[in-house]
Image: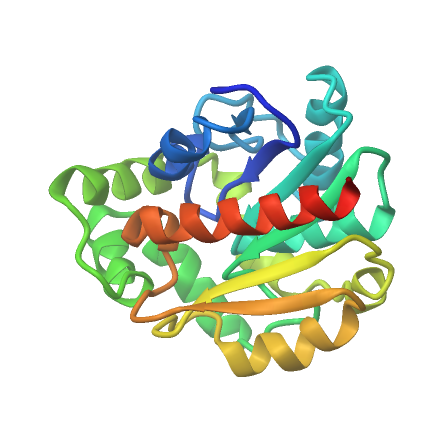
Length: 249
C-alpha cells in the first residue's frame, strides 16, 4: 500500500502473478492516489487454504479486503484473470466502487480453449523452463532479467490449487449475465500485440455487454503490460481516473 488521495486504486493481479506485478505501475500512481495491491489467495504471501479458488470466492476476498481497508471511494483495476474477477465485482455493484479498469482482461464468456490445451497450460507452470516458454507468448516487449526472474518465481510459487483453478474452471466460467449488470464507467486497456486477449474479442464479448464502456489500445504491447509498459499503462490509468473523478464533481 502506497500513497494517498481519492479515489483509491485497488489492483488485482493475473494468474501466475502477485501484488508485486503492479509495483512498476503503483510507484508512479501512488504520487497522486492511495494504491493498494494484494496477493490473491494461494499466490505471493497470502494464505493457501485447501479450497476457495473459484472466481466468485476470489471476488469475495477482494471485497473483504476493500471493507477491511475502509475503501469507500475506489477504482478497481484487474489484469487478465484479475480482470474477470473485477467484472464479477462490478456486476455486484458494491458501494464505493466508482469505476473499473480492466487490463487485458479475460472476457466474461467462456474462453474457447480445449481441455487438453488448458491442461498443457497448467503443466507449463510447473517448471522454470515451462514458464520461460510461456513468457515468449505473454510478453511482446523484452523484460529485464529481474522482471523475468520475478515472473518465474511468482508463477512457480503459486499453491497447486490456485494454479489449477483458473485453467480448469475459471477460464470456462460464463459470467456474461453478470457483466451486463455493471453500472460504473468501465475502461478496457489492451495491447495491440497481445496474443492472449485481443481487441476484436473484447469488443464483441465485453464492451458490447457493458453499457458505459470504452477500449484503449497500447501500441506494440503484449499481455503483460504492467511489466512491459508500466509508464504507458500508468499514464492511461491516471487519465481515466482523473476523468471519472471530474465527472463526479
